[in-house]
Image (tube, rainbow, N blue to C red; front, side, top):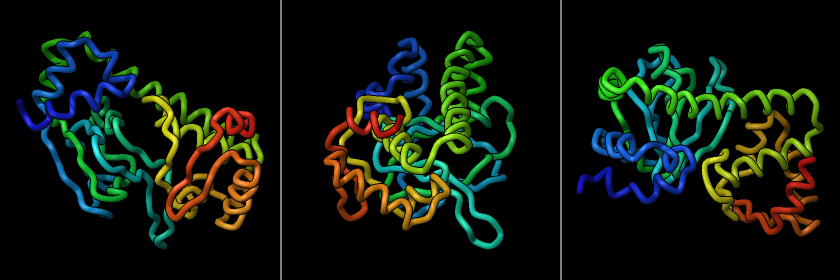
Length: 227
């Protein structure tokens, strides 16, 4: 058993991988390389050449960008079993954002050359990777709409729901490992406003705040707060 195949059960907790044909699952695991990152370590930066498709199997990754003045725009925080990096698989263009390890993190990397060779031999699998990308595109459009139309409080509740459900990639989890400052960056609202909304949700018994974490106590009420 290869190192990568040890994570097969973890990957099958994700909807995308679990729905793949068995032969494609096996091919991805056979080609995958295990990578270990330390907290804060850079995986790639915007403009870097594409190197393949990644899966988070332990820990978490921050995806975002930093401008010339050092201001960070945090787009998302992803945890297992989440796949990313598929955009560059399709167009061969440089990475669109920066990716950093949130803490000690384990990734699987399926190298670009192996993926392209596989898809050359079995082009029917392009659709499987297109589904991975289209799911994220749908979420991105929804987020843009929410930024324009929703007040801060329901936007924050919706983002917590997305993260708790790992962006549609698995069963909801109760504890989100996300400092308030990072949640504020994701939503482009102030740290003070974020704290105020979270305190209101905590007062309603919907969640509990601890250092660096948000525990969801009532998922149904959180859904209602997101409306």
